[in-house]
Length: 101
Image (cartoon, rainbow, N blue to C red; front, side, top):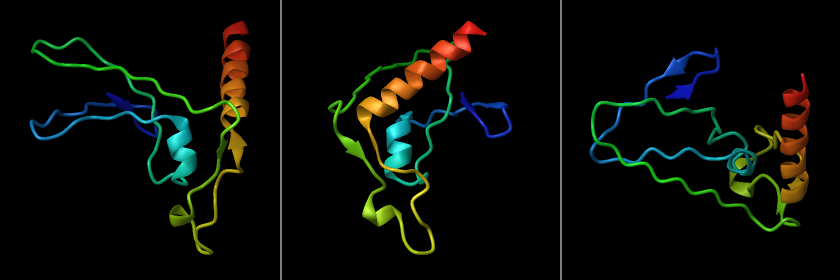
């Protein structure tokens, strides 16, 4: 399931000719929101299913900026450039603060 903008959970119906791929926050920044990083969860199912988990991060010092093909004068970059390290530290710090409350 993926979480919609209003907070409700929406089933992702599997198709035999497709893969479901959950992307991360940096892809959303690169594509200026064209591809969205959404909260997702997996519920138990009564049929066979395959799930492969792969987490991949870039070099700590790599700069993430909106791709030129994903922005224009009518659609300026929504996110300021940031390094992978700054992004990860921000996520970590936000989770620590959230966990403390």
